Image (cartoon, rainbow, N blue to C red):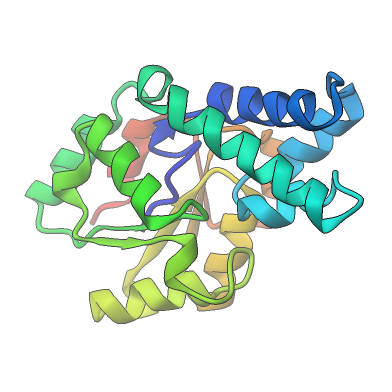
Length: 210
């Protein structure tokens, strides 16, 4: 199982700019360094709860969400890309007969759009998006849903992601966990959650295959 943003797809720039745009549009202000830090800490969790931290009312939250979504819709396809080497790794995993799934806090539709844009969609029949489950990472619910759809046992499954929320969700579901270092979180942040594997480059993923 793979997380999407920060793991397969490099969308950090888009996510940060969409956040800045939402605050400019709603409040007429540039986000402070502390606000950007708090925003980055929430990477890997659903959009609305993330933006709720920066709003004082339901109306403000709705405006923030709308501005964020509008920016993302306009710029998504032009700025995202898969990380160097990822497509080859995923192709080799698929060729080896390994079942693959996506577990993301994006909506299902936007996750599919990102996979298609990065020429990865053909490898993932199973995509668990934010709107496919009621609870979200770091809760194990989306990982458990992916396990059910794969008809896979936790002992033969690894969840690969770039955030501590991914590691916590995987551990809660009883699967092995692997934290990647090419995403938005530093090694020390990830290692606090004790993932079984820490991966420095995409090719390291293949080293986990028996």
